[in-house]
Length: 370
Image (cartoon, rainbow, N blue to C red; front, side, top):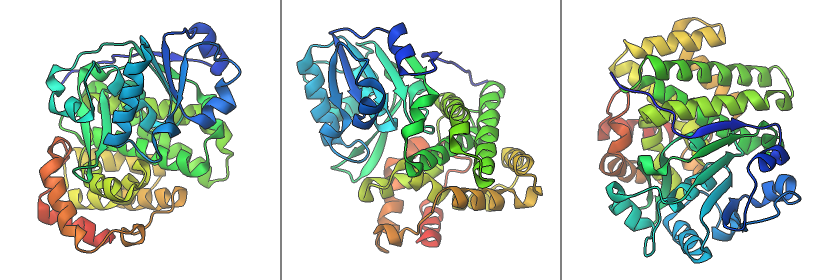
């Protein structure tokens, strides 16, 4: 049977001052933080350490050039501990720092991943409600020379502490909050369908799915989002614990060339592909765990099992405006090249899907969404 583990120590705090009081910052701390979060929640309370803003390294999700610049700054700083406060991209970049040594760059990390060691203490503080990155051993980077995203998934990347502060979500704009939440739901769903799922991961997967769907339903009913922040953050953390043990699958794999080429945010990209991937799964393998998932979603939505995935897609489209691929700039000829890229570069994810989709099936999904 597949096992289950929780590596980072998980701590919860009411607000940023409570966290800093319990974890005093020192001069040897390398603090990677979103500038808006720093100004809103941390500026008045950080009294020590070297602060580096995420925006110094560029906009959008992490790419190899950004990571290389960050690694240089970290190694030059002489710092001995890493504290990252921000969304999934901030935490993914910080994870790579904790395994760095002199002379390392992003390409070296991916080429020598089996040799990496956890060299520096790492504290991760999420400010979104979907990545779950604070409890996973995965870092996603857009490799510019390949025009796709790659994932580095090795145990030395685990943080020492994961800090949950729901109040940090209050200042997140709706678009980023909701696309992040859909991303977290996709994490839970793909983890649920993974062959590596087991009775222990199922506890976290089911709870995360129920929390996310219930939160989306409450938003649809007009409930103020401020009332849902703790629930969203717990759901994200549970989904993160789930996929840290099982991995994700085809939704993520198929989304990566789009994100890597057109810089589409991770959550938005996953919201585009989820429904079509589930439809493909239903056509190819309409039984076993997929039926369990449909029953769970139907229970959450109060609908018939046969309508579960369609109703879920409708709910997601209420939460997030889901665009066509062509409206994002994707070219028709890229249906073929993206499919080839997925088959060539994303087998870590595709082989973990409920069905390991082939190139023709992937092309069909892209065509439908184009």
